[in-house]
Image 1 (spheres, rainbow, N blue to C red):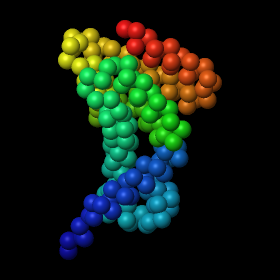
Image 2 (cartoon, helix red, strand yellow):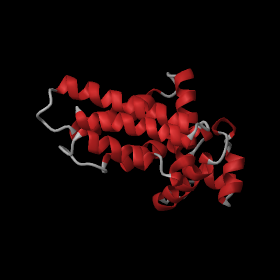
Image 3 (tube, rainbow, N blue to C red):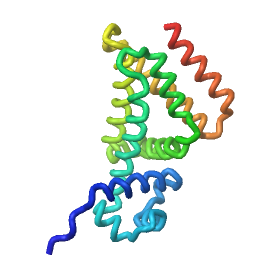
Length: 188
């Protein structure tokens, strides 16, 4: 007997809702049961759409990565300039509507640093994609190694400032530091 096929539209809806739910929970405590209750479906429905808890978690991580990368990659097009792209990424990332998403991002990032083999794809892709979009923003006139180093510096600085902000840091102090950093990019 063959089971019913997965409705990919419904799976995408459940996945988006699962990411939103995961953003409000302690990621390591996320289970089929808690997700099913929060989404108003049965655990059987989640099994049908994701197979296992591990596959559901992998799908959540992928969708989280997509949200962050897609949200920031389109902010400034190729050749817009590093300062313009970096400022756009900072403003997008610090929008209070994205706080839960970035809290989940850093929870996962922390777990990934502790267990890089289990999160290798997430780590490889999230760093590379942010860096790639910031490299492209610099245009073709910048030497590739220099563009990559500058993009890496921007990604690391924004992550650090954002983590400080989410950890309950003084918003005014952090925003002043971000402005100092971003203004320095405009001068360079």
